[in-house]
Length: 346
Ligand SMILES: Cc1cc2nc3c(=O)[nH]c(=O)nc-3n(C[C@H](O)[C@H](O)[C@H](O)COP(=O)(O)OP(=O)(O)OC[C@H]3O[C@@H](n4cnc5c(N)ncnc54)[C@H](O)[C@@H]3O)c2cc1C
Image 1 (cartoon, rainbow, N blue to C red):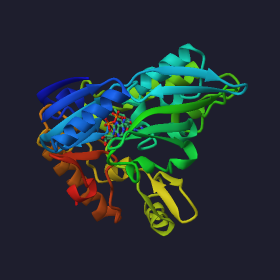
Image 2: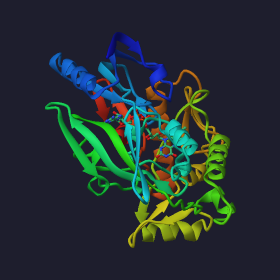
Image 3: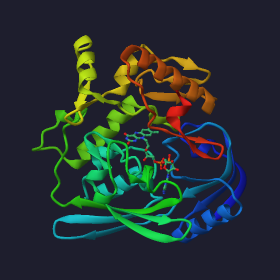
Image 4: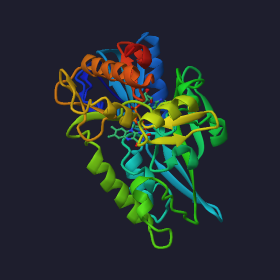
């Protein structure tokens, strides 16, 4: 475990927000995670667990200890039909996909280039190009930090839903994910249902071609956080009653809508924002990306307050036009820990 005091966090959040933490610890094992947490707890410091910092917005300096999870390790086992991969929570998600592709283990390629750590993937059940984490998850290992008790949850116990899981509720505060188990079938089936992937045919497509196509599409549409600070999709796609969706479809036949369940429809949040003509709109150094209205960016020196003010404006404009209240996908972190993102922009 390594530890420092009064650390600049700009490099540890993909929004590139310049804030400080009182203290930071990098942990590479479950034991050091536990002792870093218990040390901070004894000093009554607020504690923030962080992976790649790609799904958070710091609204101010963090007056406590940030624990950076760097627990590594990839262990591959096989059964007759599947690969079973146990991965340390601190591994990088995209690098894991590249590593498995090299070993000819397939099934994650649609989720290429999603930033962040493997251990964060179950939390919001990451998803892209027709696949969600829940489709490849076998189990999630976590630890209750107060007691050191280890918990092993099978995928069907994780309450996975759209950008949601048990790790945002029952196992949120005082727990850390330490590893995940993935199960990937040996007989590979391409998923080509989404967007630019529909151009491929099941007969001759390869995992490498899907991987390359996903990387190219993402690089052409999304700003690279290394160059332009952002946290990917800022808002979740809203799930609305069928009646409201039908009314919008009547006025705007081109509105992208997706079946959610028998009562509700999912609407593309980026399309709603775009209809309000907000691409390029700025508050301070916070702006709406010119190519993808769902992405808020830091043009250089945006503060958490700038991004929050911009998100508040977007939510207000979309609500005025469509009577839909967008909710952030990004998690807001205040001086002592997570704060209610919806409240911050209401
Ligand atoms: C350019 C870009 C594109 C993106 N595209 C997508 C996409 O296509 N699909 C998608 O679903 N997401 C996407 N995201 C969002 C983000 O990459 C994912 O949510 C990712 O899983 C976050 O991982 P992280 O390690 O960076 O999490 P962090 O931001 O570090 O943490 C997120 C939350 O999890 C908590 N946490 C972190 N580690 C642990 C742990 N070990 N145990 C318990 N709690 C923990 C943190 O306290 C925080 O509340 C994108 C982000 C960016 C910047």
